[in-house]
Image (cartoon, rainbow, N blue to C red; front, side, top):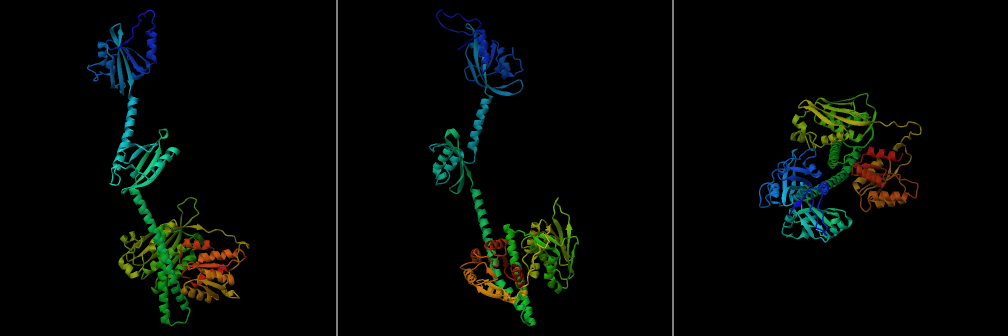
Length: 640
C-alpha cells in the first residue's frame, strides 16, 4: 500500500468520478490531523511537519532539514523480516512499516513513548520519501500503569475484596479472598460461610438505596471479619471489603470485662461500706451513750479505747471508699463556705489528745492577709490537713509540729482564685529519698517495719495527693531521716460570696432544742434493731418523743394516722425501702399544705447516694454512724 503525494494529479478517465488531493488539500489534511505527521525526502530529511508534530518535537525547535531517524533515534523494527531504519526500509521497498512502541528522548531531555507508522511517498512508481505518522503513547501508558497499580493494590491487599453483580454472583475476588475461602475446614470454598447470613438482603439494600452498609461483623472459624459494602453506581455492582478485627474484638471484650469488673468492684465496695457502717453505728452510738453514764475509771478507759478503735475503723472505711472513687474517676469536690481558721482549729482539737500524750508542741501560723471566709470544699480540706497532722503526730516522738498557711500569687491571668500554700512540718522519724519516690502511691508506706509499728493502710497520702490535684495544686515532701519531714501542698480556692446583710436577708436565729416548750415527736424508720436503739436513745437524750416503724410501709401507715415533727428514714429496708416510702409520703402531701421533714439515715457516703436521697424527696442526709451533735444540728436546722 502506498500514498501518492504528487503535486500534479493524473487525469481521471472520461465518464468516471475520482478525486486526487491537490497541494491545498494535502496541506489541509496535515494541518487538521490529530496525529503528528512528518514529510521526508528519500534521505530521510524532514521537509515539513504539521502543528501536532511541531508540538511533539518542541514548540520552539526548528527541525526542517533534520534527518528524521537522527532526531527520533535509530528505530530498529523487530516486528518484520527487515532490520535497520524503518524509514529507509519504507523508501527502499515502498512498504508501510509500523513501530508499535519506541522510547524517544527529546532535545530538552524529556522522554516520551511513541508509536510510528511509515508511509511511502511516490511519484508514479518511484519512491521519493515518506510520511511518518507518530502517536504519543505517554498518557495512554500512564493510564494503563494506573490501572495496573490499582489492580496490584487490590491483589496485594491483605484484606479480602469482592465484587458482586445485582444477582449476587461473585464477579471478582482478590488473592486474600481466595485464601480466605481456603481457610479452615468449615469453609471449603463456600462463599456463604465467610459473609453474614443476610448477604442477599445487604446487596439488595445497597443497590436500591445506593448507600453503603459498613462494619457487619461475622465470625469465620477463629477470626472475626467486619464487612463493608459499597454500591458501584450505574454498574449495578457492589464491592465488599473485609477487615480482620479479631484483635479489636478481643480488646473490646477485655475492656468490657474490665469495666464490668470495675462496676462490680464499685458495687462491692459501696455495699461493704454500707454493711460496715451499720454495725459501726451500733458500736459508736452505744459507746457515746455509755460515756454519759456513771462508770468506774477502768470501765471508762476501756470504753474510750473501744470508741477510738471504732473511729479508726471508720477512717479505714472512708479511705477505702475514697480510693474506690479515685480509681473509678468519680471523685468530685463540693463548693461551700470555708472558714479557714475554724477549720484548722478543728483539726488541732481532733489531734490534740494524741499530741498531748507525747508532749508534742503544736504551732499554727496563718498569714494575716488570708480572708476569714473562702469558697471550696471544707470537708476535703479538713481531710487533707487532718491526715497530714495525724501522720506528723503519729511519726513524731519528741519535738513538735508546725502548721503554716500563706497566700501565693496565682499563675492564671485574670483569675480571682486564692492560691494557698499549706505546710505541715514535724521533727519525726523522717523519710529516705528512695521512700519519698513511692510515698504518694496506693498502699505505699515507708517500709514494712513502719507499717507494723504504726499501722495504717498507706491510702491516706495517696488520697490527699489526688484531692490536692483536684483543687488545682500539687503536693511535695522534703525529709531527712531522723530529722523530720515537711509536707507542702497548694490549693486554689475562690473568694467568698458577698451576701446581703439587710434586714430582709437576715434569717431568724435557729431555736435550740432545749428552748421548746413541748417535746418533738419523731418517727424512727429502720429495720435494724441496734440502729433503732441508738437513734431512739439519742433522740430521747435531747428531749424528743420517739416512735419506731420497721419498714417503709409501716412508716406510711403511721404518718397517715398520727402527726410527727420529723422522720428519720433508713434507706434500705424490706417490703418498702426509704426512697419509696418518702415518695409515697410526698405524693400524699400534695393534697395538703403540710411538709413533713424527712432525714435520710444511710450507710452509703457518696455524693451520688446523697443526690438519690434528695431526688426521692428527703430534706437532709445523715451518714451512719450518726453522732449526737450531728443529729441535733440537723433537727434544729430543719425545724427552724
